[in-house]
Length: 482
Image 1 (cartoon, rainbow, N blue to C red):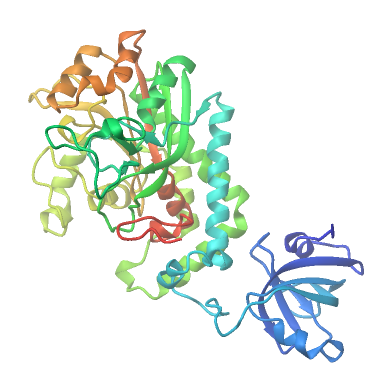
Image 2 (image 1 turned 30 degrees about the vertical axis):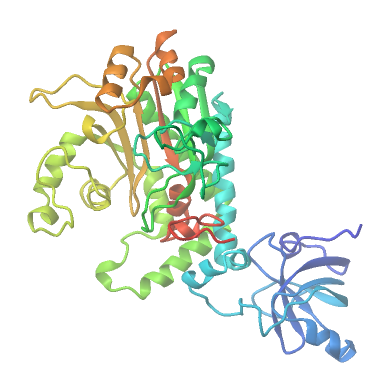
């Protein structure tokens, strides 16, 4: 096996005049003399200096953008600007050719829309090198955060028969012949003939199963893929995405809010400390992008300032009812500048309202609590009605600048009679969730949890404008390519 050195370590080396082997992909080849090579270990390219007078011409013609090469050479101090190290090539081997007439990534700036169409190749660009290394670091930091606090990592099922959110937007899993499914006597599809002998779907959340584990281990978290068949084409929605869902026994809403705030600050700080090169690159990319926008559309904060904004501020905590008062009296609402005007208590807040609270009113991350019961899920703990008889639940959403909702969670309804009454109210069959109700039958205890859409976190920390650019192979309506 040939010992090869990474581009990253060679760019940082202080040891010169030694022979090394390096392998990677050609980014550019100038004047038949200078090859910029990258192996994915860092964002920087290593310059290979070719003695073109003594190199076979047929070989030189094969050194094209995208080609994979192996270079043996001597580490020398660079005489050019922009790098301190060059490799003076003594031999070059082509490991894989790349036809320059057909290779779609050329040494120029490509639009993100174009790169989305060739998502299998976009990892080779600096932007996506930065985004996916950042994604890796954030995932690692999440596991580290929970591990340090003694949480147990649970793998909850991808295939399930329950709809945790009650929205009915689920992908069906079946082995039945869709052209000619078996039918019961009354003409309905006979799922007893299906693989699982019942109707099954892809999961929308690991929460309900997570609650089962929390009632034994005390504190657990899940981190896995979830699927929602919501016909949404916004820059913040995907059909397949990853969710982080902690569940903690003996924890109330206050504990839940604190855990979420601590986690977000921990992982953002981890990224700032450990992904400096990537964040600096993405920060500069955004600054360049901002220059092309009209002044009134430009962000007040750079990416790095936005990340520090979340670290240095305690998150503002207020109730939904207080937020509605602020929004009703706000200038955008009074002047009818909101797309969705806030007219009465009970309205479901939109992204524009959430961003107003964070970016304009409080100028810090916001945690909203105690939402109307009618707009929240069945499993959330019911509060006592307020003085006007309005019903709320012990829910909480964390709102971030530029993105709106980052986290959604609640204290769970641990009282059997209240939970069953709510399920009956929403026509959720008790027999389908008998196992979930057992947690209330046997040793029920107060408990809380939340869900963090991982791609939204990556989108926020990377500054990318579209959520489809922070997951390797985005799934959205009418698209399941690659």
